[in-house]
Length: 121
Image (cartoon, rainbow, N blue to C red):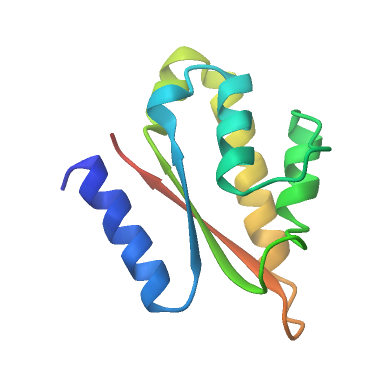
């Protein structure tokens, strides 16, 4: 399966279960700043996003500007960042995992959930 088809399948699966897909093109994110900007763009972050890992976590565990329900962050080509800046990649992956777990623990009605999908490029 190609990256495009893997990402497309993930988006279609999200839509089929009523989730909201958000796609990040890792092919254009060769560094930490680019990856943060691409995630912010995909998730329609508010303008006050601080472009750092703490701010990334804060907004990913909030998502109040988005509709309630599951939001699926589909990051294609993340291996580009992993190759160029392995520590930055691991730090961002850690924040994504932590945010996903934090939202999974919130079972309140109308809650927002985060699912992260890494699609190869």
